[in-house]
Image 1 (cartoon, rainbow, N blue to C red):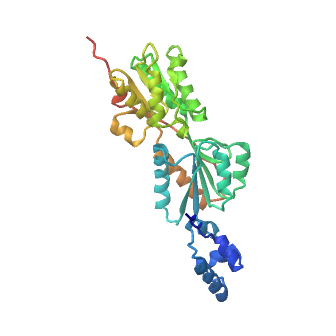
Image 2: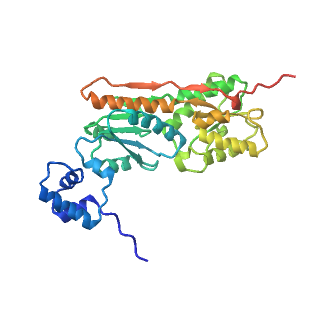
Image 3: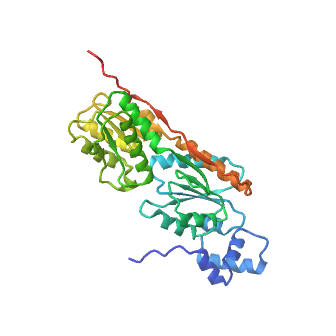
Length: 346
């Protein structure tokens, strides 16, 4: 069986026609700045090669286009879907025509993949969500010659919108402690990323404040590594580990709502009730948490996306503005049935 022929690129068209890539781009965009004989020649080659112009490649080649790149470790989680919804709402409502280019960088080596993506061509704005900015990367981004907005990370050289993960986890743990729980489990992610370590720190801070001894056996992770452990499978696995700990826990804080949903199944599979036997709190407050009645730390994800998009557009319209936005998003604990059970005194 023969292998399918790969798609013809604009580079092949330019090589066959003996012209520059920019000339091919101008022809495809019906620019008046191309001689008629050159235009006819290029279009003939396009027809011969059966070339189908790629919209992204054309946008990268066009001068004056407005191509916005959004780079995240993944685009498939509920958290990132909410964030992208907020971004898209603003960009689609703006009176400036723009195209959105999504970079799904993965969690293995996102910085390497980001550099590779940015070599593909010029973009007119970049939003980095959940990508740490090292000193070498900061230097590259400052030379980027386009607005750069950070979401979820703080840096003194860029506009940024980020959360106090430690404070959010502390609020959630305080809530459970005030409900009378002393044996509180924590479902953590697979990796030791900054976000995860901050949430562990907030959990520990609340225990210390209430003079509850820290028991390391109550901090558990699963074995599923996708999305760095922020998944339903990971939460299910970690909850099963917590259920083996003696004496039994009476409450759980999960580092994400999707982990909490996995934990919910493990608790139910064990024949236990939520919240009567085990109270449960998640993190992120994705849409489904409201309908499940899952208590969660609301990070105002969609709103944060809108704020970042509005700032990028403002930067494009006012490139000489020197004042930098450094906004810490205040998380709010949404208390619902999963953790709001009060035992009846008899």
